[in-house]
Length: 136
Image (cartoon, rainbow, N blue to C red; front, side, top):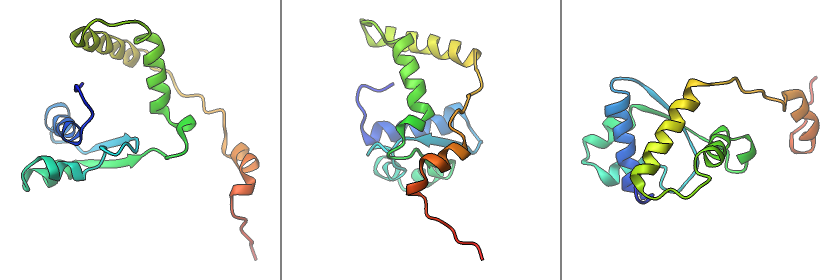
């Protein structure tokens, strides 16, 4: 957790993920389109040799800009908000402790996602948005 959401904060978090939490592994990162969430921030923050080393560890996938209802990260943030952040928390240390405890509990009780909006349903509902394909 950082006090602010700056580009340099984001770059430092990426370095921490790569070097501390998952050293030597390829990291698949799914993230939103916040203006600070770009690998170019690594070049703004670190020396020229360090930035490509860190960036090379990540495979980045951005969530759709206009599909937050399909965004599982948003769903998890809403669960965190309702189960853990639904009260006044007096200081940063308590916040970090509470979120870490919630995360341990949540990760220990994983449940499969029940995708109710199936491909067939999408084709029907979104028919006007999809191009038609003529087969010969």
